[in-house]
Image (cartoon, rainbow, N blue to C red):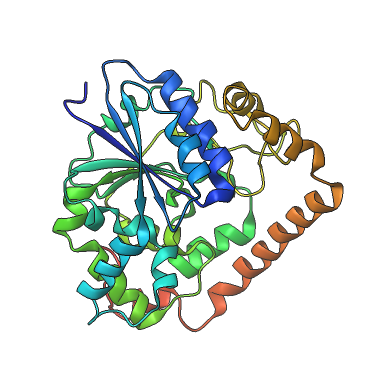
Length: 319
């Protein structure tokens, strides 16, 4: 059993508060009463109403707290000004890469995207040993049958497609990330090359951490797939990645898990209304966005500056 606080990070705006509420509700519902969590919500400004609603999800063993990114990232920006001339907005895109620096009091932590539910006991994820690995994450099986993404991962990132991880659920070895000066290395790469990416922070994590990743079982990042593929049995954490959102689409894989917990939150009626109001045109637009993303993925390997091409010149990408 964990001997101290289990830190769990989310990062949201007001718009994502309803989904984060469902995720946190599922966490508290399945947490062992002997485990103690500190849920830290990273943000760039939340309304008092959002803070009140999310704080109300606290339980005797799960404390919900808030941390504004502005001050923390500004401090990092000042510390590393020799590496970075990017603006503050650029840093906020990569917030999860700075958790180790922003929270030196923690040795290990979990990061979770807000579009998730946790039907399992999250302490079981936290307890997994990382040894010398920088992160733990699950391979992104959603791209296995998408040729443009396989081409992008192989020929732009320079990685085996079956080892490409999804960064929506991360077990973070904060001690090792600090020891390796991960954020400084990242900032130097960002400033020098400014790679064009499909998923910027996810792609940097993949290329920099490759070789030092503990690959998690898919039960810890079970993502909806098209109906012809089988769901994961006994999922412990479900991630409604990309456009597979149960508050926009009916009858998606694992959708019933979401509503089980959504119906226990203050956002219940709003979420059901959101599903009812979402139009066919909006759903088609979501599908079109995915098509556009795949077109970009197919083009990026041919651009002049890719992770694979830079690594081939001898520049160290991996930590």
